[in-house]
Length: 216
Ligand code: C5P
Image (cartoon, rainbow, N blue to C red; front, side):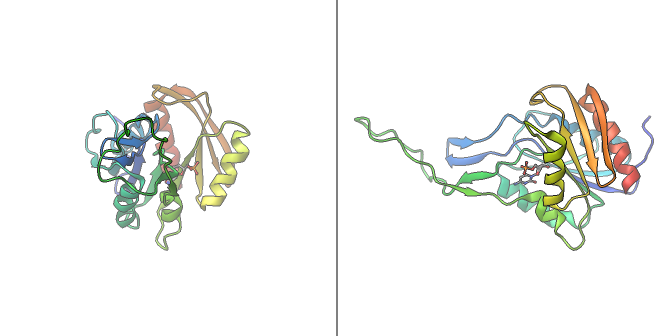
C-alpha cells in the first residue's frame, strides 16, 4: 500500500492533447496520449490526495478515486481549470495544450468547391497559457510544468520555468515519448536538477509525487 504522503492535499492535473475545431468535422490536435498525466493522477490518489483531472480527448480509463472533467479545446481547459485553481495545494500541467487555434470555427463543414478552387487559408490566434495564468494567481497553488525540448534540454526547460513563474519543471528526456509506456524525466527547480531514469510512467509518476509531497 502506498504511503499517504498527500493526505488532506488537493491536486489539480491537466492531461492529454487539446482539440481545436476548424469546422464541425475537422480540427487541429497532437499526439499526446495522456498516459503521463493519468499516471500522475493515479499516483496522487494512491498517496491520499483529492485529485481533479482535467483531460483533453484521450482513450484512457479514469483512475480510481479521481474526479475527471473532460474538455476538448485549450479555451475549455482554461475555463475548467481557472475557477478550481486557487483552492488547490498543487497544479500539475501535463497536458499538451495547442499554442494556437483557428481564429474562427466554421459553423458548417467547409466544402471543396467544384472545379478545383483555391485551397483555404486557416487564420490562427493564440490560446491562453493555462499554466502561466494559474502561476500568476494571488493564491497560486504549487505549480509544476512539463517541457519537451528538442535541444539544450535543461537550459531551455529552466528558462521556461522562469518565464512561466513556476517553482518546478519536468523535462522529458527524449526521444519522443508520445504514446509510450515509459519515459525518463529531469526535474529542475531553483535548487538544481534531479534525473528520474527511464522507467514505466506509473513508477515515474510515483517518484514525482514523492518529490512533490516534500515540497508541499
Ligand atoms: O510553452 P510550452 O507549451 O512548451 O509549455 C509547456 C507547459 O506549459 C506544460 O506544462 C503545458 O501543460 C503548459 N501549457 C499550458 N497552456 C498552454 C501551453 C502550455 O498550460 N497554452
